[in-house]
Length: 110
Length: 113
Image (cartoon, rainbow over all chains, first blue to last red; front, side, top):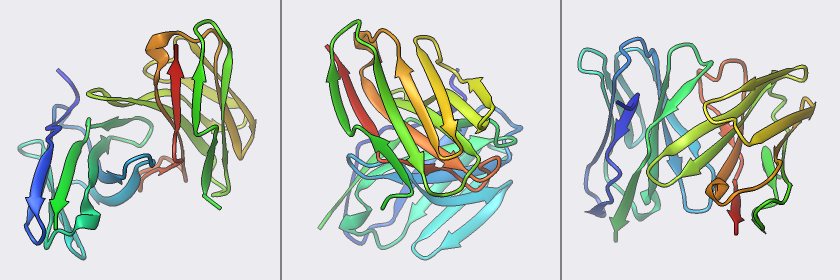
């Protein structure tokens, strides 16, 4: 069983839609959770990070962690064509080793 | 200039050749990492270094070696390239444990024929 599972998509939505991206994980000890955005032919860039359970909001983006279900989500409100990218989740216990999801490809259609 | 610079951006090499991928950073971060990215497998850690005198193997270090020439420079070598090392390679840095995330370079697309 992989440490982190992420549906690869692809996901295609119309502009303005709410997007929900998700990851599940197997290690209940993970404490730090991140979402990266990766544009084509670029390296991943950190979008959001959260510690332990709860929600964190940054503009149109909301990261949610449910440790009881071992499930994390990234919501994008009012999605824009510029949000078209691959989204990677990542998590760690101490920061010495990160576990990445395989990424979900998102296309926002104008 | 980019915070984390990788060279070359693209490389095609033949089986059995030795190749070096280079990474330099201006972030002032102590920790540097090499990852490879493959479709369906995600990012996998090859090697990491917490400072100039510290080198550690990651999940998939076989067939690779690294050198930390300075705080700002971390290179990855494939001693004898093989086709299944065809992948996208990323260098990353972090300030401490990276609990607030990594800074990634733009990647090197390596093809071994």
